[in-house]
Amino acid sequence: MSTSTTVSPFTGTYSVDPDHSSVAFAVRHMGVSTFRGSFAHIEGSVAVLDDGALELTGAAQAGSISIVSPVDFRNHVLGADFFDVEHHPAIAFESDPAHPNADGTITVEGRLTIRNITHSVVATGTWSAPVEDPYANMRAAIELTTVVDRRDYGMTWNAALPRGGDALGTDVTLTVHLELVGG
Image (cartoon, rainbow, N blue to C red; front, side):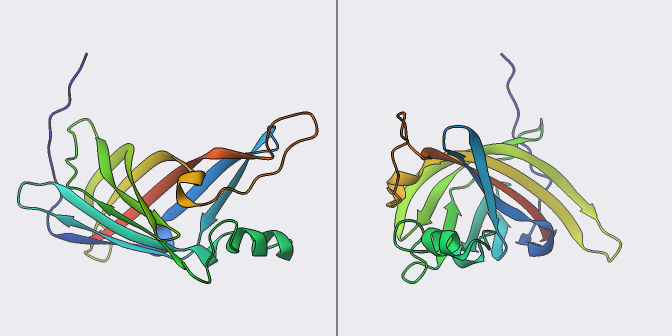
């Protein structure tokens, strides 16, 4: 069993570059495929603590979901059965201190809030050390994945399939790619 040592090449504070970052989701649909989507409007930051740990905060506007048509499908997902954007427009995340490992991996524990319901989550992934871009800014990246049960966030809608099973899976894979600017 190999172990990773904690290391942090990060210093200062970083902001999420929304043009080069993404928050995406994937869920089983009709038992035969995976439906994927994303959110266009995201924001966030990463603060580096004195011990080199990282604290991540971020939000996605649920109404910026990539579902455009058909309109009735979009309205259903944004309505009370799912995101209920009229009452809960944002999805938010706030981490505990997380330590980057020397092997380029990171485990981030924190709280995910959807529909004003908050649960603890653990996300795993990778990080890329800061580099200077052509405009004298420092850029770094963190990629994370976690799986949540959508029912834990009040998204309980489903429909039975004629031969058994449900139209929509309950496990949702969240994938977050953050390109960070700062330092």
